[in-house]
Amino acid sequence: MKKLAIASALLSTIAMTGTAAHAYQAEVGGSYTYADWDDYDATHNFGVDGTYYFNPVQIRNSPLNEAAFLDRASNVKANVEYADNDGIKDTQYGAGLEYYIPNSDFYVSGRVARNELEVDNTSVDAKVTTYGAEVGYLPAPGLLLALGVTGYDEKDGDDGADPTVRAKYVTKVGQYDANFEAYGAFGDLDEYKVRTDLYLDKTLSVGADYYNNDLTERDEFGISAKKFFNQQVSLEGRVGFGDDYNTYGVRAGYRF
Image (cartoon, rainbow, N blue to C red; front, side, top):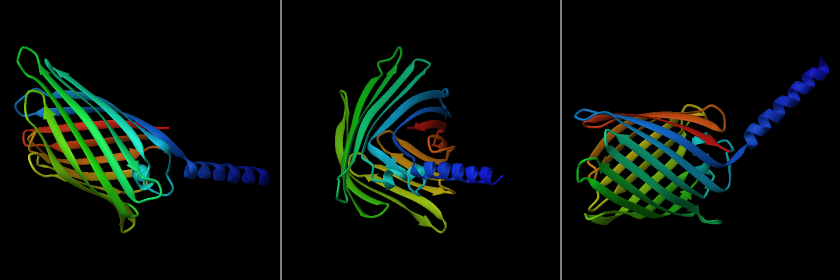
């Protein structure tokens, strides 16, 4: 019995140590979004995404969803989304980079994306390229302040570029971890986004967000939740409420 107790204690220690020391260097995910329109048929959108970190992300004692940000983990990412609903084809793909400059508190990022929309038996064939870049500074642990530019270029149509401002802050609220985010673009393209997440524990969060974009005429409020079943596997969901539609989305992720 004494040997069994020692062995059990040793295995428990190893398991706990393995959990605490676990790191990951990549994440892949798959998503599905169902949009219920007031004036149109419902649409279905499928997506895949991936992120690769230049160095293994150390989790430490942070919320699993914020580990990469708090570890200042530089990365590259890409995503593809596709929808084909009653002759309406909508394809979106993009790539991005986040780089935390070593031995400093500075940060830079860049992104580019493409949206292609085709409607059968019509002349609709819209192609829009969007892009953005930022320079940021981290004046305190868990706080990022960034300034940048965002722009769009529509084939045979309009284009423009505007300044942006963004902030992200992960901190303690009482006994809980919390995330606060705000983003704004001002000029020809007016775009605003705010988001907050409350971590009920290191693996589970609930959140709320608001998004407004005058180019796409989106005005949407959302609620969300995310759960890590272990340090590799996560599942999240979001419900969005727009002026003339509701969206329901799920995403599963795997880290390795």
